[in-house]
Length: 264
Ligand SMILES: C[S@@+](CC[C@H](N)C(=O)[O-])C[C@H]1O[C@@H](n2cnc3c(N)ncnc32)[C@H](O)[C@@H]1O
Image (cartoon, rainbow, N blue to C red; front, top):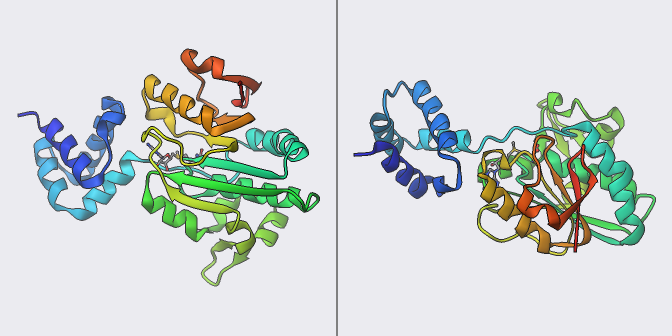
């Protein structure tokens, strides 16, 4: 009996994560790292443990959907969005819609919201709304709460922290309502075959597809294309790139920072 296959079946059933959507090597590596931590010698022993232990089920979910992120992750990319992309959009539009796809604990959409809020103070007729989605409900809860420890704020200026966060009695910092109001968080699986939002001016899908196969990455670029408006922006992670088959859908806006623009 192939116990790895049986385990995959249980993962699909219990965690609602479709293993076939990920590279097998990736899934195996993650499971094996959990097995080491729980002292299980083989897939059979781990499978038995996994199906009966709800704590382990959550641990494996977290291991499979790693969600490391931070405010202003890759400074040059966000500087470029602030200095060139958003001003260009604000020049030609009053209603700007952004999607942060695979937002993890929320630092990416909050970075955009802080930036857009400060920029729209000089352009009161412009309104920016952000949809932020992730497959993982646990991280979305953290994102909605918008409470971070001091260390997470290291890339923000004192002025940004003062204006957009409330210091709490437990030493943590909570995003203020004027920023939270700009973002709608929702659960969405990027492999579901459809976009969570349409009529977009910008979609950021950064550091999410590293474990997707080439085919799945291409499909994602194809799904984002009709969801974007003319000249809408597509922002990838610094180590990610557009596949050959979908290159014709986007033109580079800044290749180094992996910022593309929709090609009609
Ligand atoms: C490393 S974080 C990236 C966070 C942020 N975009 C950044 O660059 O800092 C990757 C996130 O992708 C999410 N993810 C993985 N597979 C996904 C899928 N199929 N659909 C939606 N989100 C997914 C994970 O749950 C995780 O929170």
